[in-house]
Amino acid sequence: MKKILLHYVDSFSGLSKEVWWLALITFINRAGAMVIPFLSLYLSDNLDFTKEQIGWVMTSFGLGSFFGAWLGGKLSDRIGYYKVILGSLVLTGIAFLTVQFFTSFISICISFFVLIAIADAARPAFFVALSAYSKPENKTRSLTFIRLAINLGFSAGPALGGLIIATIGYSGLFWVDAVTCIIAGLVMIQTLHPKKARELDKEKVVDNPTPAHLDFTYIIFLFSLMLFGFIFVQYFSTLPLYYNEIHSLSEKNIGLILALNGALIFLFEMPLIAYLEKTSISHIGNVISGFILTGLSFIVLLITPWSGILVIGMVLGTLGEMVAFPFGNAFALERAKKGRQGSYMGLYSMSFSVAHIFGHNSGMQFIANFGYNNNWLFMAAIAVIGTILLLVVKHRLHLEKSTH
View 1: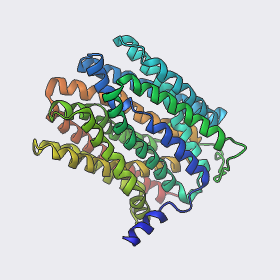
View 2 (view 1 turned 180 degrees about the vertical axis):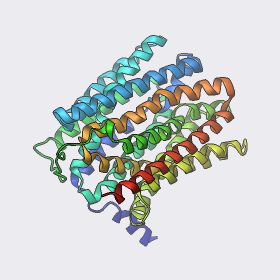
View 3 (view 1 turned 90 degrees about the vertical axis):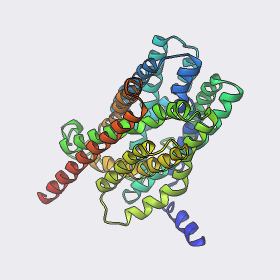
């Protein structure tokens, strides 16, 4: 037991204090993001939206994310990551206070587009900041540590969110989200102001940088990540409804299953990534493994009507996420050295925004027309396609290496 504990602690060694502060800011922000996991239930139960309407709201959410990621990437290259992150945090807090007062279908679509555009403008900037605050050899673990903070917050958020809904109502979620965003911004001012923080990776943009959109290998990689995001977002839209409608779980129990995801990541992701980094498996090879595990997480839901299978599916999906995301992020950051990091990471964030645009809505429409089980088969098929694309990326990387 002592050996396991020492290995766990050792997996955090060597990370800069700036990465720790960035992780704390991320945790505060993520712990407050309680509306998002319950959004489909909020729209269904509180506003009586149909599944088709919920799907279109999710599409507006995704379009806002897409625009915000593009804007954030551009602004990160022009005005710097610090200003982009700080502005996003403060304005997102204000936006959360505002959107709770909109109830019509059109106003909800517009308000959530604006909200997520502001919030997701920070995503490329966070990646650039993380790259600047990390030594090159620590980047994958630093990325994993930030994900750990995100998921620790996500573990606390849904569990607390379920209690807030039961006691105060959905409006309480919006107020908590707003306050935590502003608190995260204040912490950032105190800890990561440019006069206080150190940049550990001073690598500048290369001469004649490769435009991100002309890096064909990177584009194929992003397309595969978009497909991964397509199936991953089901955990925030169709799966909570599946838990409720098919397995009759309450919001509290749904929150606990979602919290299991964050708890597993908190306990196992850092040691797992530290171990995998020591193997000969490439970044892309690890992403492929994660894709396969996530696809299997949907297949197991077809095996039995026993509600315990939901936990098994969540464990498989979490393992897939734990492996795919850190190594996918690390590959994107490494590839971004060919050009401007903001633009590269902007495209990276936009790939998941596209997943939000089509994933939620397609899942909702698919369920409305063909049922839940066929939707899980559809997601598994997408996982197969994404895996094939990653094998193509792996082959192209081998060819690039052999020609240099």
